[in-house]
Length: 290
Image 1 (cartoon, rainbow, N blue to C red):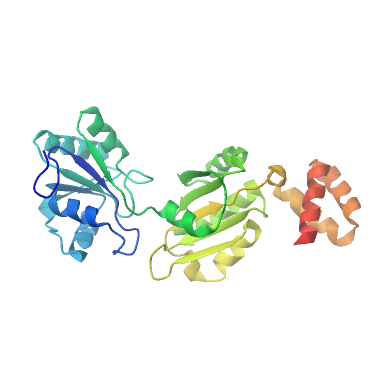
Image 2 (image 1 turned 120 degrees about the vertical axis):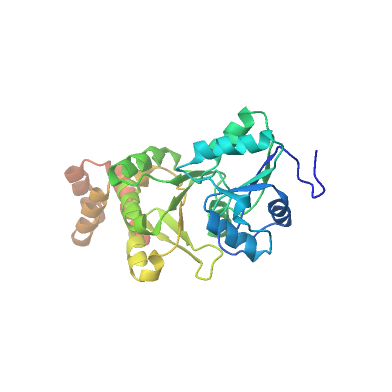
């Protein structure tokens, strides 16, 4: 049964919170956070700051930690609260919980035990970046965070090459963005367009698009561009042909084009690299136009 504030007992609320600007929170989210018996938060202090910013009760006794290292044990505590008729809100440090953030296991266990889960929509960095990117495609593929090691990251990226008609969406941390982009160049080549969306909704929000081949220079031109959390969006391509040319072949073709006529450069590049002459020719024509 709903309480006076519209909160149901024995219910888990999955609440979207701001990704930067604290005003990006819904009236419904504020109502839920003010009325639930307990808030399961990724970090207690971060939750307290959010509640205090909106003059909501921020007592630490009402907030319990739920993060990637304790989600299993925390889920058991939440289920016990629900069994006792308590209401619980789940929040992450930023955005919508359980999407590249803790919470999915909790939601699964709550549903298994037969308790209702109610989503309270809010901010999401991936959708925020997509909406302002200007990229057009009927589909996008959200991957989230790529592996931290280069070899595994390149293998995962290579698996995504078949999705050439989709916008590919990734999250990345600032200390890994350079090596991540370098791996994208190695897998997709230098001509595919990338959009950087960093510090979204914050003071130094930046949304910038360029070819992958220009991306590392842009990032390193200003040390401030390497700060903040990133959303990386790879634009779709009309055909996979240009994506299937190795970075080595592109370099060989570029060098030969400086010294030889187009057809001869393409022929030699194909013989040296073993790449398709047709694809190299298409790439050479593309380079001439840019």
